[in-house]
Image 1 (cartoon, rainbow, N blue to C red):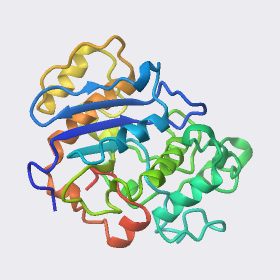
Image 2 (image 1 turned 60 degrees about the vertical axis):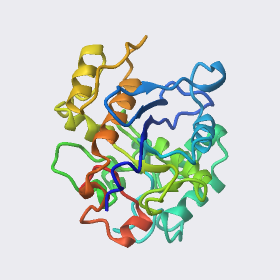
Image 3 (image 1 turned 180 degrees about the horizontal axis):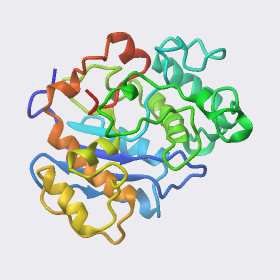
Length: 288
């Protein structure tokens, strides 16, 4: 069931990164309040030139008591339903929470990174290049990734090659989720709490489709296109940015999309999201 209309009054979308290192130009945080004002970018703390994943974690924890709905652009779990395991032959993790703990315990990368976790398992679970075998052998998807009407192309967390891959970002994100567990509710693993912040998984391409942007042409790189997308989501024009990067515009657009769609009951109760699917694989908010 959708939250009551005034349950969330603040909305944030976070374009995420699984890159190595401790500062990431690929991370962008955009926020807006209820109403029509356009989302704004949140600068990294302490005058830093870019966000770290650890700084995002602390930013969230500082807002755990706020009526804040936060969308992260990475996969919250690995496929489980089709094969009965997240990493067949290696893990016996019964649910996504156990997978988060397993990844965090086996990834020593700086700043909640997980690149080494994938590299240590290349060819067994992850495809990082031709030396790992036939790519199609690694193509397994969650239930929510197999839904949809063909306007978005699902990615798998086992494919770590190409610009559209979500593997490193997702496993780094699982480490973040492990550190959030018990401190901030994470949907659909937790029910929507009566108060405080809630984290959901998003896919920025869904927001782009909602604005009328076509598949393959969904990246916004100028002020006019961003304002057109925001207008389609019931938002006023944005304050000009110094630079129009995909990360910044995706975050701004998706924060507005979250605000515009928070009241849709079908997004909170997708037909194919059984209790078992929710616990083991999670779900992308916006997939019905």
